[in-house]
Image 1: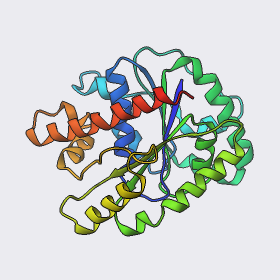
Image 2: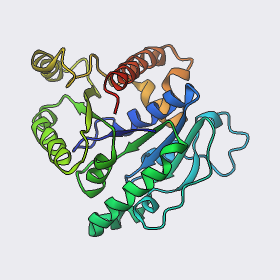
Image 3: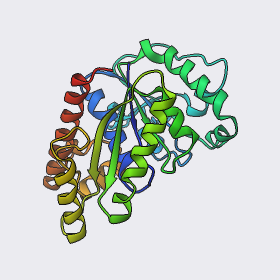
Length: 265
């Protein structure tokens, strides 16, 4: 199982939108996908978690089998679920995640034990983290194979790049193995914003051509909003406007897969 964490130290960067689409992308390829929602706001869970009465739901292939609460992964005595076939299984977010901060060391050790137990059951594990840096983010990065950091191109977000890289370095110091950073992913890009275009230009000038930056951006599009509302991948929409968003998103995911293959964890 390859574990991918989507993390940034700020909200509003499209993190959850990227995470759920990544789960759909791998599930579409008949992979066994595990999704862990570590955010008490449980936005990803509300999109992915299969409704109890969803037997006739047209979106059923895109909805996840609920196997438990994410908070249980931080407790002793974890019992893994029964093996699953292709598709998505999810540990949903809940308010119980709020207790993790007060018992970080023991909780982080329990998460490691749980992930080890889940390892043979799935091909990919995608972890969506809270928007504010804390013990759950740190714990997730301790057990991750790969990290993707969505980045908004407003100036305050750009100023946080060094802080983000510093946080990654602090995690690596606490790990036995290296954390493979797949790169900064410019997201929520507003093509009509002179400030964002200038910041993107500067970012490419400094990091373009390196593995620290993805070649491409995710633009603000109505198609993404509708995809989350419809609880299905943007590339499944028949609307013309969504087609471009789908191509944009899949191009990014293909780069992610290529980088994962190049940097096998």
